[in-house]
Length: 342
Image 1 (cartoon, rainbow, N blue to C red):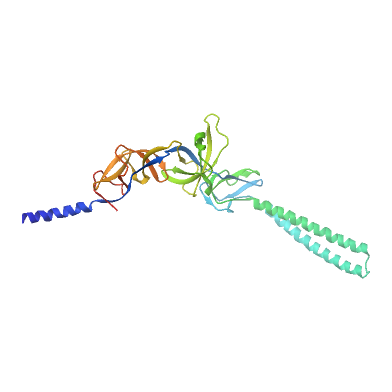
Image 2 (image 1 turned 30 degrees about the horizontal axis):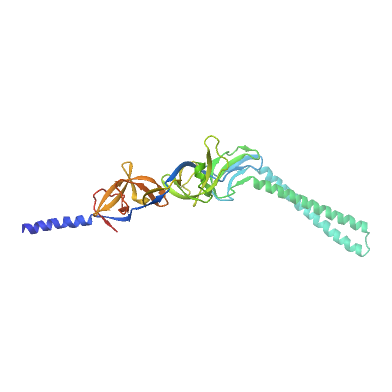
C-alpha cells in the first residue's frame, strides 16, 4: 500500500515535469562569410519643406492650423483680410454688368444700321459710326472682365492653401499680423518625404549606388530603406559626404529631428557563425543565444559582428556550427530549462 501511495504522489510530478517543457522553435547554426555592417548616425528630416508665403500685402484675418496638424492638399490654412477687395469686386461686377448691357445695345444698333445700309436707307458713314461704337463697348466689357478676373484672383490668393498633403511644422504669424507679399506664414512638410540625412566617408559611399537597399534603425525599430542620393561635394575638414536615405514606406511615427542609425555592409569579408537575428537576446547587458542540448536550454555568450538582412553574424567560444539555436520562444528561457521543439 505504501509503494502504491508513493507512485500516486510521484506520478503527477513526473507528468508535470514533462508538460513544463517550454515550446520553442529552433534553427541550425551555420557558418559562412559575411561583411559585418558599419553603422553611421544621422538625423531624420523632411525632403520637401515649404514656407507658405502671403501673395498680397494684408493683415492675417484667420489661421486654422497649428504645429503638428496634418492637412490635405488644397485645404485653406489661413486667410488674409479682404473686405476692401470684396467691395471692389462687387463694384467691378456691377460696372461690367452695365457695360455688357450697353455693349449688347450697341451691337443690336450696328446690326440694324447694317440692314439699312443694304437698303440704301442710311449712309455708310452713319453705319460705321454705330459699328465702331459697338466695337468700342465690346472692348470695354472685355477690359472690365479682365479687371474683375484679376481682383478675383487676388482675393483667392488671400487664402493660403496647402499645396500637398502634409504636416504643419511651424506657424510664423498670428491673427492680426500684417504680412507683406512674400512673408512666410506657415511651414509645411510633405508627409511622405521624411528621409535620413547622414554623413558618410568616401570609402563607404564608393560601395553604394542610388537605390542600394539599406537598413535604418529609429527608436529601436528597423526600417527598410534605400540610398536616394549623395552630395557631390564633401566637407573639406571631415572628408564626409552628405547622403540621403529614403524609406521604402512612409510612416507617420518618423519625425524630423529624430536620431537614426544607418546600417550598411562593411568592406572586409569575415568568416563567422550565422543565425537568424531573432535568436539573439539581451541579458544582463550582454548578448546571448540559447541552444538546445539533451532537451534542455543552454546559453552561449556571443559577440555580434554585424547583420546581413535577417541574419546575424556572431563570434562565440561556446556556440558551434550545427547546434540548434532557439529562434522563437527564447524571451523567457532560462539555462537548464526543459524545452521541446515545435
